[in-house]
Image 1 (cartoon, rainbow, N blue to C red):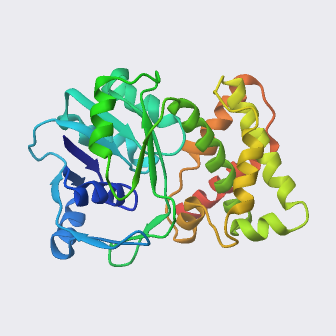
Image 2: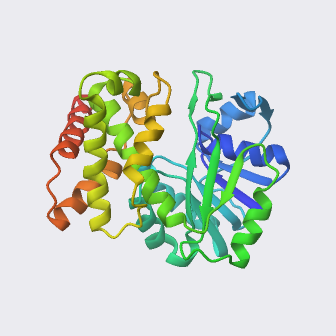
Image 3: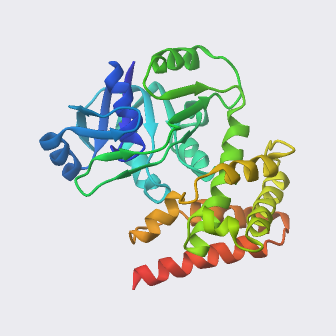
Length: 306
């Protein structure tokens, strides 16, 4: 199977690297500066699951290549529109596209660009960052990709993809309910990123101050109410399940959005909280906490723009 990975950052670089380590035919679509860096140093991954340095195949947008069997999309949401243009020459009749972004809005973008039938459901659980040398640092015990057909069917192509993913030193799990998995992760990441960016703190201090847990749960309930109005297939007790997960997280755990804010990077507030607020308006749902979270993110963006 010929696999194209969009980008070689913390997510794409890590999971693409694990597939390359296993021996799969992996090519990375990168910017010219990133290619120069990787040509010098290799794709370096520091991980609690084992370090590696790889020499990957790379192309830059516009360079000639035959269509790929599978494309992994792990870009930030605010780069997705331009990324679809970069990917277009490498999408053929049989190409499957597996996005690993947070949220749900990106599914519509990819389906509009490439056709509904080409897009799979997918998500990932991992904690990674790039250090100052462009090396991937992966620190979480969990390093998992979950994927599947939106229909839940065991199609020929998903079986083929699943076979290619097996025996990799990262977890690739085929799901028969990927739509539910994606909405439930969306709920979790919206809540976690919301409280940590609003409070400018890891989950531990937020969880432990007076009314901290109640605030987290109320925000999660607000987001869940919007999703249920949109007919998202959430588990009945998903809010309590997510609260249990947050109780088990380390005191210092930060969301990736919070880490981006600390570095002065762009954030995905429009893609995550903003999209949910648009659904809330559509269904006439009052969301005071989510509104405050989103306002905080927009103020951050305005300050960064100055």
